[in-house]
Length: 178
Image 1 (cartoon, rainbow, N blue to C red):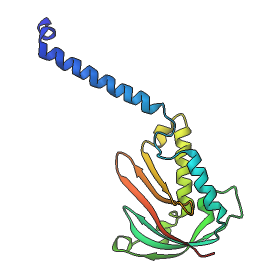
Image 2 (cartoon, rainbow, N blue to C red; image 1 turned 30 degrees about the vertical axis):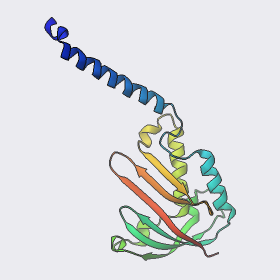
Image 3 (spheres, rainbow, N blue to C red; image 1 turned 90 degrees about the vertical axis):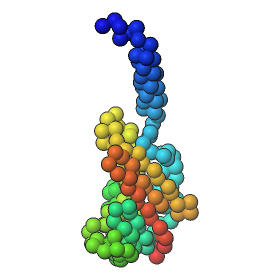
Image 4 (cartoon, rainbow, N blue to C red; image 1 turned 180 degrees about the vertical axis):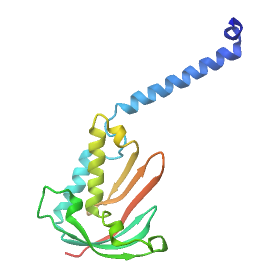
C-alpha cells in the first residue's frame, strides 16, 4: 500500500489535481463574492435606461422582435401607464401582430403577448431581484447579457445563457407612433 505514495508519477498527479482544485475554489470564491455576477450591467445603467425610455412618454410604438427560437415578427403596442403599481409588462398591450419569417409562421398573438419593451424591462428587474436574493442562484442559475438602445433607452438585446440553452430576444426598429 505504501508503494503508491512513493511512486513519483502518482505524487505528481495528486499535486496537479490539488492545484487545479484550489484554482477552481479560488475562482468560485472570487466570482461568488461579486454582486450581480449573472448580469453584464449595473443597476445604475438599468435605471438610467429605464428613465430615458420613460421620459419619452410613449403611448404607442411599433417594433420588430426576433428571438432565437421563434423567429421574427412586427408588433404595434399601446402603452397605458395609468396604474404605476403594476409591472411595466401590464402597461404594454400588443394591438397588432405580423409574422415576418417562416419560423414565426405558426405563432399567434397570445404566444408573443409578453414580448414587449415593458416585459424586457421587467425581466431585467427580475434578474436583479434574483441576484440580490440570498438564494438567487437557485432562481437564476444562468447569465444575462443586456444591451440598451443609446437614443431611446429600451433593451435592444436580452440574452439568457444557462446550462440548457442560449436564447436571445432582440428588439429592432422601434418607431414611436404617439
